[in-house]
Length: 106
Image 1 (cartoon, rainbow, N blue to C red):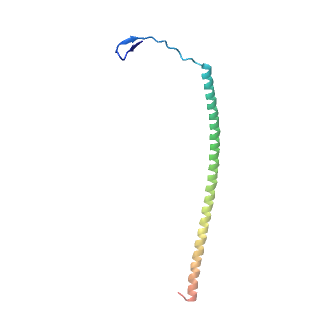
Image 2: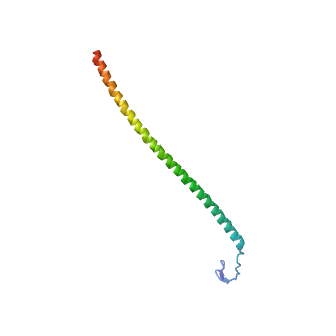
Image 3: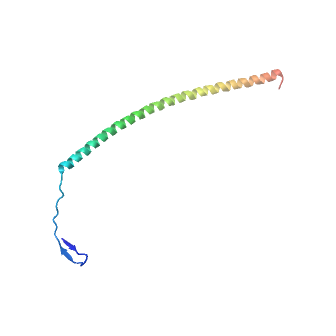
């Protein structure tokens, strides 16, 4: 290996021995094993949460379907009420006109 000296601009020979970083395979494997176990626990928790969420969505779907049915019934009842009020209004108008004619005020 040659290294350029910044002061002289010349190359000088240097040798270096590269020492391997000490490995601890047991510690690395243990850390990986713990990380995988934590990931498995997180995935299991997520599965439970998703199942709970899906159950809540089913409950909501059923509640909305029931609400829709009740709203249709309510709408029908309001329609009947509107028809009844229209008939009563027509009858009241007729009676008012009859009363006016009978009393001679019109």
